[in-house]
Length: 240
Length: 240
DNA sequence: CGGAACTTTGAAGAGAGTCAAAGCAAGTGG
DNA sequence: CCACTTGCTTTGACTCTCTTCAAAGTTCCG
Image (tube, rainbow over all chains, first blue to last red; front, side, top):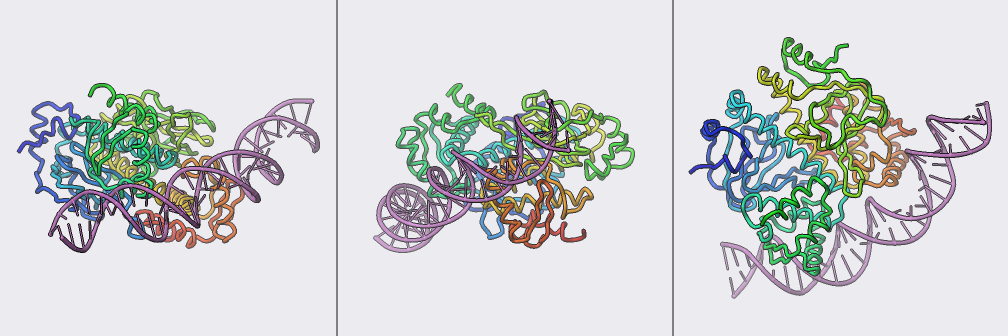
């Protein structure tokens, strides 16, 4: 019944009492089933969320009703920060599989952050981190080739799985090829072809949604990570 | 000598006394000449900045030393929010022309925001706005054609010029074609060709860096703005 | 088992990139 | 004030990566 926010949600430097206080305002939610919306673009903004298990995608809508996925969220990650000064959520959040989240009512968080500067700092920190990740995403979309995009995507996922305690080498993609393509600015077919090519060079082994990274070095090279992303790379490489 | 932060930097709902307090921590800086760096990626993070006059670009570096422009900043806009929880700036900021900025030392801002919840809220608000803009940029880079990108870019600039009190129909581009292309994920040549095409349909008139929007309706249509951007569009259309 | 949805593969086509060169604008210095 | 350098912009021709269209193969799940 404990949402171990202390280790999960925020890389918190809060004291134990502080964590207790934070814990008090957090609401548990019924698990979401695959395809359920956590919230939709336009819904009244009232809470931010932390993923406890499962995964979600964030997306915005284009004019012609297509979606543009802006992010995938794995456990321990915060959702909804981009709505903080809005009346309504500017994006939608949809579960990719059975997913549980912690709800953090924003008004309560506001109050609490008055008394807990560290907490406030953590929120700033999360937002600023997301800003930096967005810039990296722009670089990917603007300059990288299809292969570089997919490799970067896999390396990034790998690092995130590792961080949450799972193997960085073997994991299950919670999203479809279609969603990967959408996120990376590529056609489904291109994603599929790149996966095939990556397998032919023995870089990865793919079986449906199961991915195994067999040559991490090669993956990182193809990803052509810059210093920012490379941090992720070295973190993967460090210890396994 | 007054940096009219009240109207410029933040759409502040602060009381007058609050603004005074904020004003006290702001440092004026020597004007930057074209090409000067306000800060470089890697410099120690200590301040955020508000543009008073002129313009800057933000960019990150790719592995091969190329730059990826992540943003342009016009007067009244804040710079440096993405570094807030960092030891060093994660991006560089370079003046596109002679530019003056207000420096807001972050440590002082921190202290002040303890006593001024509204101020803190404003910072959150700015960051969250930037997050939303980033998502729109991802959509542009991931889904839009060259023409849609350029049209969106022009419509967006137009709205920002209007907001700061200048004509939304006639303005001077502070950046080169190269920088536009870099930002929009296009080759220079493509940007140039699109400009030419836009002129042949009498949508805009271009003379060097001077741009005149002759058919705003058409521009907005080509830009294919979604609801978020359309807000900008309607703001342009509203009153001139 | 069977149908729907997703994935993979192939072939053809298009939009944007690259390469190359000419045109212009701006600034320098004689 | 003009010749000249330098850098930016435009235009053209060609190339290439990725998309689109089409169809077969596979997986998932009722």
